[in-house]
Every structure is written in structure tokens, then in C-alpha cells.
Image (tube, rainbow, N blue to C red; front, side):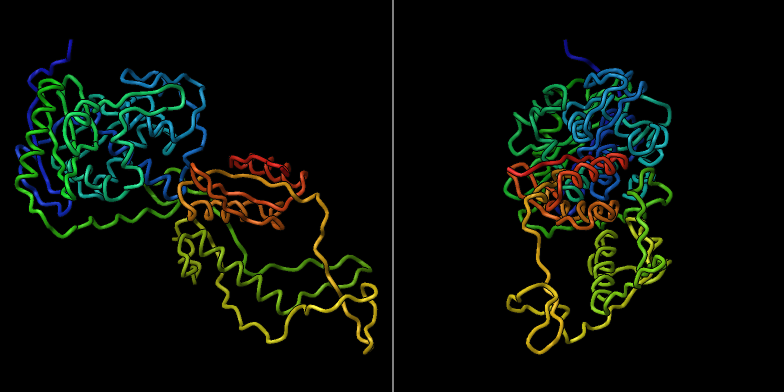
Length: 460
């Protein structure tokens, strides 16, 4: 028998998602219980964390006793179980799983209470001025309140700020790591033309809530209802509001994208898990030569090349490809917490480091003019056909960024390896190649000690 809410206060709002224009509102600023609409913010922060390197989709999360004990709706996670972060996102967005939402919060902030504070800070940054969160899932708790206006704004933000993840909300079913789960919004998705999200919610105190989005011919409407009496009546009311929105929205309108909200620098207040801080020296002291050993001097060309590579790598890791931090103060504020001293490379000398030459009778032999010619050769042995894989990513850019971060983290074992992105049907694989079996095995062990997932692969 379907649940029925006990006369929860009603509120509604309809907007044109393209422009943000309000087309209809009713008690839109009344603070009410959002129920599982809360998970929209949990997921917004999860997407933000993935995109900014706080966590990877493939990172294994260990489930706490607190998360496992959350009441339904839930995925059925067990205390001590490990599961990839991507499956927590799927379960929270599609199944509206409370245990998955709590695990997301604990992963990113260490505790659900700390994560709720981050949720509230993020809400304020987005302009959700009348929203306060106390948990990651939306079960009724004193002070855990929002409004139809704020939740409509958040629905629009999810669409514009993280379009690469938005398809999650339209999936009728998805695999969440341990089982297949069905979408709590599947009835509206199946019944209303153009509907593609976003989130349902129900508690006894809140009633039946829903933020829904639909697209027809490039026109996108978002409608929100708080306090429905049943899932059927709520869905009917949302369909009515969506119809109203499409009837009032202009056919053509300029898209007014919401202004981006700056992501706090790593280690700043409001970010619990920063990407690993990487200290890079632009100039390193040379060790003294061993007694009796001749001193080694790097050529000007090699020094210049090293400086250029360091500056480029630092700029990419700091996620500012065109400009590297120029001062220590700038570096401290860089997104990836990279601290560096800027080096301005000098123009390369006109002469070349090495010159191709015909084969000589022997290495180091004198040529006819009496000058010593040094010939270097690449090894042709079959011992360096091993490599390591450090993950699969949704874009070439993210795969390349992961390779660069990993190379800087483990420069000792990966210094001579080649970075290679391989496109596969399910994404872009980030690989280091040109290694021996021993080097690949050692690199993976050292990366595992830094909580970086790694797999070795061999020739063939």
C-alpha cells in the first residue's frame, strides 16, 4: 500500500532552466524538510570532489559502522566492506540510498557532521540562502531545512555545473557494485515526455518531494514540489507544473549559465580531503662527488630542458596549464598545493646536444679528423616491455593529469617511464610504459603505499 504523508506543508516552484527565470512559485521561500532532495547536495559535492582531484571514482571506500546502520532506503552496505566511490554515487543518485550518501560524506570529510557543515557552506556559496544541512541523506533532523526555491536552484546547478554526470538521474536502473538498483523516479521518467531527472524524497515530516527536469526541443523546465500527499499525486502535480512551464517559457531565450563557484584551494577551510601536496624544487643542490670520482657537470642544454619540464609539470598539476605560480604566495593558493620557485628558462643554445653521425668502427674511436666522437644507442633488449596502469578516466585530459600527478609523486621509479594514454571503449586508460618487470612491480608497490591504485601489465 502506498505511503501517505500527514498534511505536510506544500510549496512549489517552476523555472526556465535556460535563463533561470521563475515561471511559477507557491510558498517557495518557506523552510521545510527536504527529505532525500538533500542527496542532490551530497552528489554535487561528490562531483566537485572528483573533478578537483579530492577523490577518484575508482577509489575504494571502507564502509563504517555508522554508514552501514542507516535505515532504508539503502543499498545494503556492510561494516568493513570496501566499494568503489563510483558505486556510492550511483546508489545515492538512482536508489537514493542513505548508507551510500553517508559513506560519501564520511569519505570526503571524515565524519557526517563535518560533511553536513561543508554542505551548508556550499549551499551558501551557490546562493541557497535559506538552507541548512545536518546530514548527508535527508532523514528528518532538527534544523535540517531547505526551500523549494533553493532546491530548484540546486537542480539547475547540477545540470549546468556537472553535465557529464547528469545522465545518472535519468537511468531507470544501474549497477551499484553489489547489485542492480532501480530509480526511485522511474514512474515520472517513464510517463512524462522529456523527463530526465532529478531527485525524489519522502519522510513523514516532509511528505512526498520531487525536483524534476524535462527537455522538449531545447526548452528545459525544472519544477519542484514539497509536501505531496502520495507519490502518485506528487507526480501528477509535477507533470502539471512542467506543462505550465513549457506553456509559459519562450521558444527562444538566451542561455544564462550560472557563474562558477571557485573551488577552495587544497587545505583551505571547507575542504576535508585535499589532493596530495607535492613539493617540487626548481633548483636542487648537487651532491659532492665521491672521493676519487670525477665531478659530473650537466651541460647548459640539459639544465635548461630540466627547468622547462619542471615549470610545465608544475603548471599542469596546479591545473593552470598556461601560467605557473610565479611567487611562493601564488603557489600556496594553487589548487593542487604545489609549492615552487619560478624559473624563467633561457633560449636554447643554437648548437645541438648530439649530432647524428655515420657508424664508426667502435664507440669512442677517433674520426679521421682526430676528434673523439661519442655514439649513444637505445637498448633493443626485450626487458623493458612492461608497464603499469593507474586508472581509467572519462576524458584524455583527466588521464593525462593523473599520469603527471603520479609521475611527480613517484619520480624515483617512474623517471624513465613513458606516459601513455590509451583510448578504450569504456574510457581513457592512464599507463606508464617502457619499464622492466622489476621496475613495474616496484612502482606499483610504492604507489599502493600512497593509496594510489595500480596494476602491472607485461608484453603481449
